[in-house]
Length: 309
Image (cartoon, rainbow, N blue to C red; front, side, top):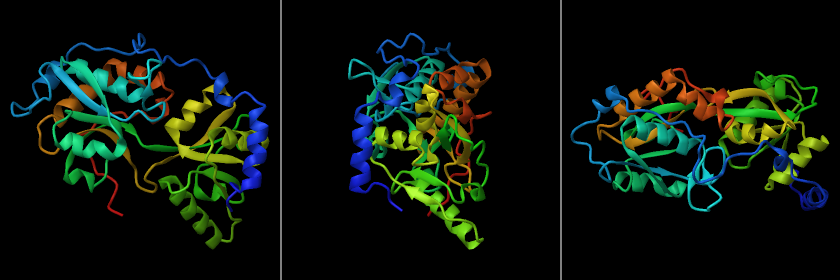
């Protein structure tokens, strides 16, 4: 059922207009272009040794990184409206430091990063890119985060945990339309109904304020979303995480630094990331954006990706 019907939407929107948005009470996030709290690293000699002599950097002494700037915690613009900040820029900084290079971030639209990378406009892409078998035909990957979905409920909800598909039976769940998580939720619902369980009442909202008002008012029971985004909003203490699932459920999925296929830098980046995992900078980079639940234990070069659809 779609609860974005016009009457429902405007009723909730009118109520929301009289309230302070939930996210406004969240702990302050550093949106300064200077980013004084961003973790930094010394060079990692083991990583430098693995950079192929044939690799052509876009600029001398610089690691040029393509990144999207659409939404925190992954990436957005600082308060100068031009400097990318977020977890992806933080990871980019650690990789650049490890390779002894200055970081230059290039904002790129999601649809344009493959061409920009292949053309050499930037050296790598760090932009919440999931490893897939199809993408591995054209790109190399160095993993740095688990791709997770999170199920969030209001803080005082009686729902304590959602661990498997049957736990969503009979609930009213918000999900984004035409998303991977929607497809997962619909598969869960189909599986539950076939087993004689109550169906899920699926809700869709195009406005985040209205979405969170529906959750706070009890009109919806839970919200299934990319964990990073929902976790960032949960900093205000008004929602809580009750379950996580792989973004490729039932397969596991990982987010990775993306480089040109066979260009000779992927192993160096993987080594750099593992050095940052070991020295603690990696954990700091995740904690700054409330992404610690998506931490990996070890970075890998070109692991198995999500299968072709």
